[in-house]
Image 1: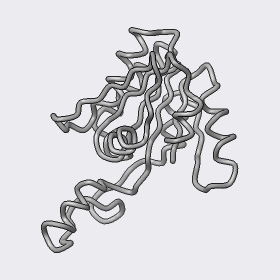
Image 2 (image 1 turned 120 degrees about the horizontal axis):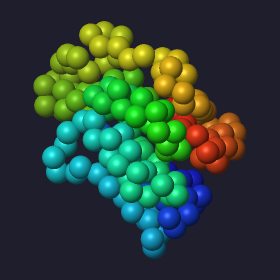
Image 3 (image 1 turned 135 degrees about the horizontal axis):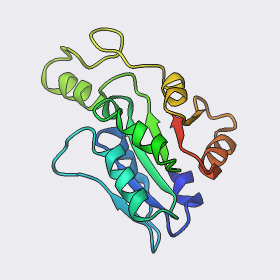
Image 4 (image 1 turned 90 degrees about the horizontal axis):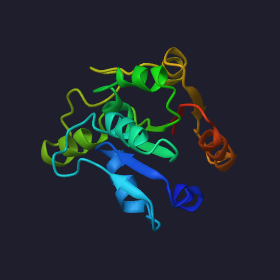
Amino acid sequence: IDHLTEVLDESAIIVTDVGAGLLTGHYGMRIKSGQRMFTSQGLGEMGFGLPGAIGAQFAAPEALVVCLDTDGGIMFNLQEMQVVATHALPLKLVIFNNLGYTMIRSSQDNLFDARRIGSVSGEEIGFPPFDELASTFGFGHTLIESTIDWRAALNAALATDSPELIEV
């Protein structure tokens, strides 16, 4: 998020979903003059990020639009990736892959003595391989899974003129 703050120009638009996308974005982004950040904070519905980013991209076609989302949040409006592909929107979809519903897990840990149900990938829920998902919808895919060369990978993904799924 610090690096995004540094490299995004004044015309960039940041859209967040809920969970880790919202929290990391709102805690870490330092919005520059001219930038806009949109979220559905207060309503807390999962799935706002991608449709919100699509709307922002249509409203400002020349702007770099970055959507901060999660593996859980994207599943609520996954079909909207086809809208991005159909209209060749160059938006950047950052997915924080935290192997499930982290906010729900935290609530289950804190309020229910760590009795988890339906919040951890591989037990009761699952997610598709995001590289395959990106390919299916005509997105590029950038995987950032370590601190080695992540800046170069993120910069290259942001510089493309096509849709890019950036999995962190």
